Amino acid sequence: DIVMTQSPDSLAVSLGERATINCKSSQSVLYSSNNKNYLAWFQQKPGQPPKLLIYWASTRESGVPDRFSGSGSGTDFSLTISSLQAEDVAVYYCQQSYNTPYTFGQGTKLEIK
Amino acid sequence: QVTLKESGPALVKPTQTLTLTCTFSGFSLSTTEMRVNWIRQPPGKALEWLARIDWDDDKFYSTSLKTRLTISKDTSRNQVVLMMTNMDPVDTATYYCARAYGGQFDAWGQGTQVTVSS
Image 1 (tube, rainbow over the protein chains, first blue to last red):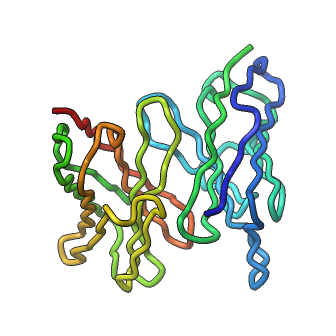
Image 2 (image 1 turned 180 degrees about the vertical axis):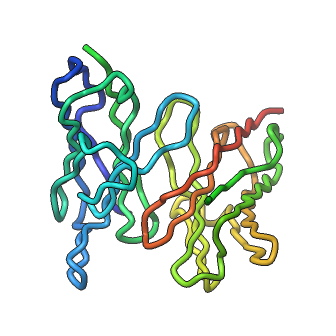
């Protein structure tokens, strides 16, 4: 199974500041045939299901604010929120869909400083 | 509009078999590349992928749970069923179903809470 490791486990950032969450996979999730990284980012608020933010490592899902961006390739990825808003307080998960069994990171809890 | 809804018992006893149903609308599981997944989340813990069924009836399971899981679909009723045998208190969790079209989990149900207790 591919192991997904996020860092940090928790993060406190001031409103309007940048927040960056990292995700590392135990093996590459880049498909050479189409040059796509099968890495997604989800946001989960209390009592709600996860919400897809980013797929293919850097493609923003429709309706997601452009302050959210994803980057990286191969085994190392990042989710960046350029200017933190109060509504961004949540737990964030990375997930690989390169192969089954699909796996998620352990989650990063983002709070306001 | 794509919607998914999980249903099943809120409480099961240890050793019993859990049967969950995902009823969806807004898409067809007979469409090429369409998939439905089950994911669970114990209280206060991370997401764990359980199983996937594809438009062509291919099935995939979690490595650690594959001996206990069975996934099936009823395309005409727009339903996917997950069965998990030999339930244990550690299986207490919220269980979600999610659509995957093109690879990404782009639509999720609200989840159903399952408690395993005698």
